Length: 307
Length: 324
Image (cartoon, rainbow over all chains, first blue to last red; front, side, top):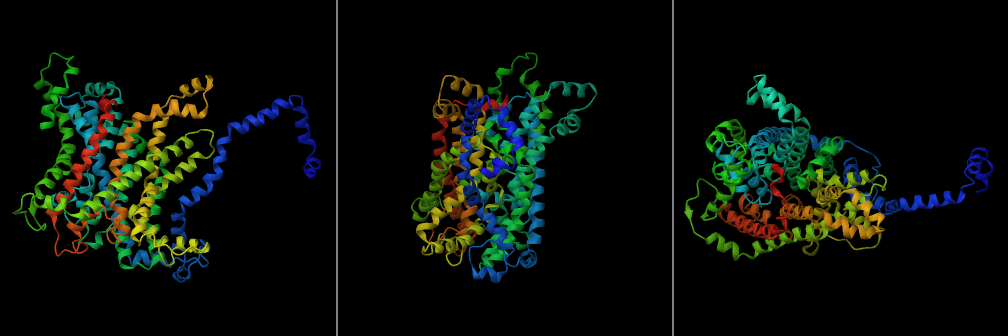
């Protein structure tokens, strides 16, 4: 205390003396500041809690860089003593995570394209049209949000097989994109309904037909929704497990990352560092995508309850 | 098509254009209908048909090869109803849901209220971290957990050993496996309910709080008398969505325990998967699609009933509101 009062005297002293007259209000201001920011005491709890919360990710990255020997020795340290990239090489080559990454990208993009096409057209028709039956379609769509699904994988599998797309990534993508993406349709619908009618009228006067109006005027305007829907569906497809698992049972070379990881774990249960590297390869790209576009993604999720 | 035909009843509201009859209006909107076709085709193929077909297949003894031919009436349903393993999986599925509703929903609401406070510095970082597990692949993160929680050498047990605790085989013991998976599942989907609640909290007009503060209401009073009543309607929707998504923890269970040890963590979706796609795991020589479909139908009917029980609470919300 004495040190601080002696050395940096001039400036703080000036400040103190200048604010000296209303000293009591200043003190109460500090108290008010404390009371106002009392909520920040929660950080005493939040810091350890958040560290524990993301511990699996910290461990995963740490283990991926440890040598197999170091992993065997055990211990609770997270910093690898001799960081190595060997695990990534093994996962990428031997465990075929390179191929799985390519498959996952193909699968996810196919799902995104299909869902955007279908939801944008349906959302446009429902949002701009005043045709008979519209409310029933919307009602049925909303109702399906609450109808149990996920127990009907067998008929879906049979149907895609009957189309000749079984045992393929395109078939898996169709099975993933097929079930109505209600929230996505409602997002497009709300957006198109909110655009002014004058756009449509002007396009009509200029001689643009229905398709042209949609394709060159309304669809380009819906870019923010396309981005939000695309991101949402992309993350969902990247993380899909049951559908790609069922559709690649006979074709290991078509596995996606999630399914590949499952197969890797079944085969090399003890290769923890290799598995951790595989987990990094599967998870880090999608986490990066999310970090860049998190606002869009979070708003998309919030949209489900706000419709 | 039947959808649009029956739909005429819902329309009278819009009869402010008397010049055009129904037929004329349908023709006038032919392009709009055409734009609905891709969605409706997929809806029929991937939502409607699977429900109908599940019922149909359930009446056959069928291994999935060729078309179902061996009609056996209600036998698959009788076998499902009298199969203790099915009811065990059934109970576990609902337990996952119960945990999501009783533990995850209130807990995430508490965090949402905390994170909704603009005075909390860095709240966006916390929200981001809590949300992170949601965007990761469940099957992959499940395997990461399986390694962390391994009985011999997993880092969780190394930590416990520091405190002299004996090793716990979290996912390997019948007594601990299910609770462990429930904790992981809660961790994984916590962020979604958190975002739902934050969205709900944002719908509360701020001037309500200002008015309450002028009247001298404490923070707790504001919570009980303003926040909670205002978010109850959305809360019902959140309840339904959470119920739906929590009933089907296939990814985490299949990736970590495949329903084991000794089927302690079996849920209906892993049960169905086993009978249809992994018969070796079920101790069968070949798949039993018919039986698996019957199990799916029975479970689907039960979940629909439970959902409908919640529907009366939903009535107050204008579901059609989205249609404008």
